[in-house]
Image 1 (cartoon, rainbow, N blue to C red):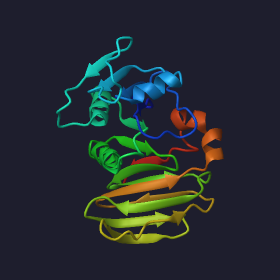
Image 2 (image 1 turned 90 degrees about the vertical axis):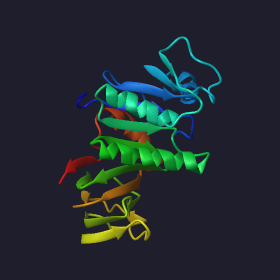
Image 3 (image 1 turned 120 degrees about the vertical axis):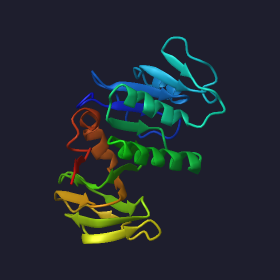
Image 4 (image 1 turned 90 degrees about the horizontal axis):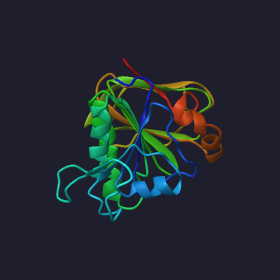
Length: 232
């Protein structure tokens, strides 16, 4: 396992305004058309993976893994599996939202896939970050602000407890057909969300100025903008 190191994947979707740069020891992967974004922003890429339908050519200046056009795995899933094969357990996915809704939903499913394989996954959109936890807890420090939603991704999640947010729950059940946990809020104090059984999808916001101030910590250190996930 590459403990403390991150696998950063760049897709061809929308990107937040600052550039997430990998640090030493991180693995950076472009999923097909995400390579255009990386090139335009001077991001070092270790490998490019995809069928190259959106990129339009097979790169020769970097390790390129060409996939067949007709396949069972998305380019993003292939990139995730590539990182897992190298022992990475924390994944940050940029450019995986926007455009086609089915692509965004497929990348949310990747968060669940990573969660079931005991890895942490974070999917960044222009306004929010999404992650999944299963039979575990996620905590945020007092620097987080804005909205946060907690939704059941499994048919039901049991023993759900929410502490330190505007609205709390205590040993409750959430269903994936009733969005009870949408639009909660950070209130300037440490908070924690936990589930005894089942998978939760957690989506939280980070204001633009906080993203810019924490950009180095987002990928390198974590505490100001990346929550702590632990087993219960």
